[in-house]
Structure formats: C-alpha cells, structure tokens
Length: 78
Image (cartoon, rainbow, N blue to C red):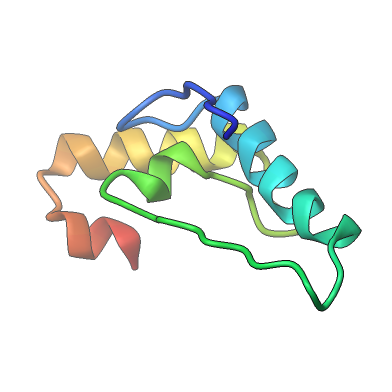
C-alpha cells in the first residue's frame, strides 16, 4: 500500500505526480495479477493529471475560479 498526500480542493503537484504514478504501476503487472483501486471523494483534486496541452497551473486557475463562483461539485467535475 502506498499512501500519497495531496491538496484538496485545489490540485497540486503531489496529486499530479500521484496520478502519473498510478498510471505507471500497472505497466509492470501480468495477466495473473489482481488490481483493486478505490477512488473516493476528492479524487478529482487528489489525482489531477492535466490533459495534453494543459498545465497543472491551468487546472489550478480554473479550479479556483469555479470555487469562487459557487459552482457545485458536479459542475466543477464537468
């Protein structure tokens, strides 16, 4: 079990790096391995790997603006 701390609700570099790590982990697995992954509340901030063409700062700026606007969590996740 690997535990990584990250920022919530505004994403940070620790969350971005954790998302990268999660994508790397299964690369070394075989068909005989079993992976269980629990994604719980806050995952959108805690696992914040920007899409190609976006930076972490882009995500942070948009996230802060949505929080300030009073957007609901489902609206923010869109």
